[in-house]
Amino acid sequence: MRVAIFDFDGTLYAEETFKLLMNHLKEHPIYRTKYKRFYRSIVPPYIANKLKLYPDAKMKARSMQLYIEAFDGIAEKEIVTYFDELTKAVQKDFNQAVLARLEKHQAENIHILLVSGAYTQFLHQVTAGRNFL
Image (cartoon, rainbow, N blue to C red; front, side, top):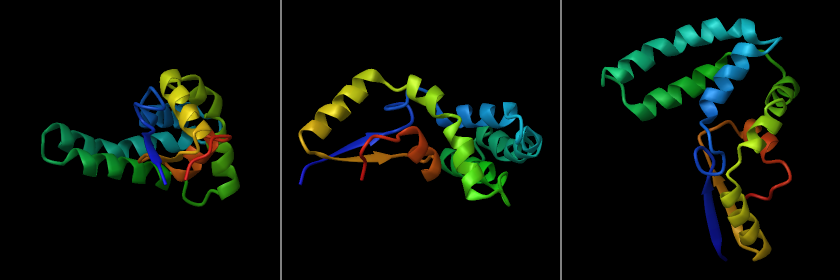
């Protein structure tokens, strides 16, 4: 079995996912009220990281955890809808050369893995129609 591994952030998706997610929360008509609390919660690990007191990997993981915690109590269906709102914007910024390579591998029946630190629901929404393991 042949396998091709693709990274999402900065490879398939040309931009950074976390910035997109932060801006979406900040500007969202329903959930924007959650932004201030979320933002205040990520400032301490961010500052500690900039002062070299907190490792990058921990800061990124903690920031992603705090982001999803902003949606505590929200039904999964609503979260799917929330991430679905990002689909067109994300797909427009897909790296076309990487997409072409991905499609070539699919045509050759190569199994494709997508790796990312992003949320599973988000990845399912923005890569709908693509076959990943």
